[in-house]
Length: 241
Image 1 (cartoon, one colour):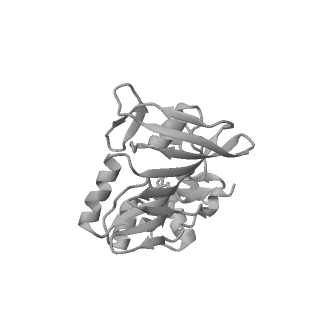
Image 2 (cartoon, rainbow, N blue to C red):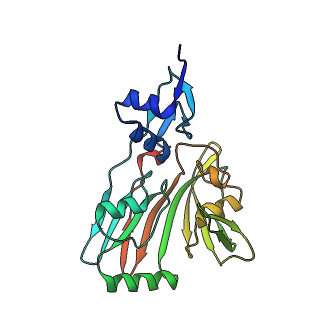
Image 3 (cartoon, rainbow, N blue to C red):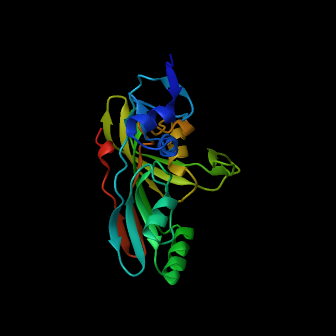
């Protein structure tokens, strides 16, 4: 008698979907057994296992004019997927599990001016994150970041890296975790994640940079200001811990 089955095959049966669709859901990171995320689609599980599937929020348009489109990107969708759905190129990118302000451009001249603003560090970027530990005081983090480009980019604090500055402000403390606002003056790969790790307050769910397992990487791009525009993406429901 069969007692175990590959996770994606069992999920396909439970959800009434194809094996391919089930595998894609697991790879996207939205399938759980209890509170534990299913990581290996081909891993075997007990046939009595009941899966829980995380819903992906709808793409919310914050603003649009003849130059730019601002999106509140939901977690678990890549920036490239959003770009493809909307039909315009990206001005910035967010990691797949990061939610919040994502910008797409409609005008080439505007795109050139916006890229220049990023290069000259004139763009305000504010993030909200839930982190491990109790953050009681504000702190400025001025530590250079070196990014190693592999199949999956990895960044670390290094004297050989590029300058990176983040300002962290506490917003709320709940038990042994804290909600913080992080304002960045530079835009290095994984900057917020690496800088928070460097002060022993990794982001919840960010196991890639030492965070505790959680429902996702608890990072939200809250506000972006450039070229006279100011875009704010309301916090998602899963931030109301």
